Image: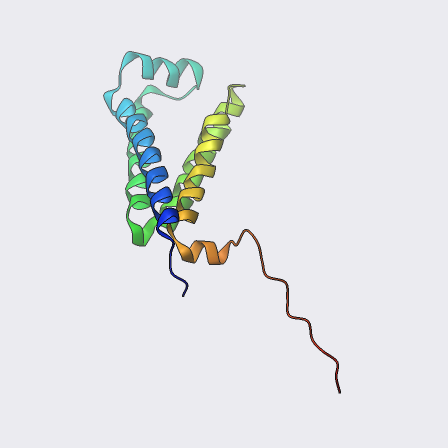
Length: 136
C-alpha cells in the first residue's frame, strides 16, 4: 500500500473539522428548539415542529460515525443520505439547495483526502493499460 502524503491527510482533517463544526452547529440549533428554527421547519420547510430534535439526533449520529476513522466511509454514506434529504426538502419548497449539495461533495472530498483506500477505489486518473507486444 502506498504511503499517505501528509499534506493530503492534513487537508482532509481540516476539511473534516470545518464540516463537523457546521453540522454540529446545525444539530445544536435543532436541539435548542428555538422559535426561529421552529418557524423555518414548520413554515418554510413544512415539517412538524416535534421532528426537529429527532432530525438533530440523526444529524449528530451520522456525524459521529463520520468522525471515527474506522467508520468514516459509512459515515460519509449516511451523511450523503442525510444531505440528500435536505436537498429534496429544499427543492420541494423551491428554496436554494446549493448548501446541502456542496456539503455532500465536501464530505466525500474530505474522506478522499484522508484515506488512501478511498483514493484507490476512486482514482482521479488511471494509468493506461500496458501495451502488449506481438512478437511471436
